[in-house]
Length: 72
Image 1 (cartoon, rainbow, N blue to C red):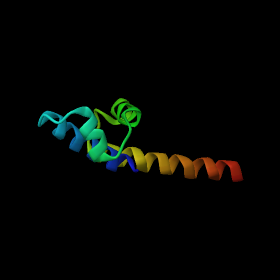
Image 2 (image 1 turned 90 degrees about the vertical axis):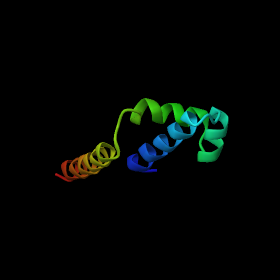
Image 3 (image 1 turned 120 degrees about the vertical axis):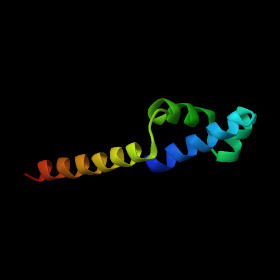
């Protein structure tokens, strides 16, 4: 999953939790394990979708620059 997808999934899950669904129901509906949910919350919990997109772009650019440096 991309960071943008994770942020959207977190928002969807939070909405379900706010609507009174149990954590187990949310994890099952989203198809994620509790450990995955917690890791995502820790890593992306405060991000907005556009911030996650920018993070992904920076990760791609960083990988490209590392490859260029390795070639040099």
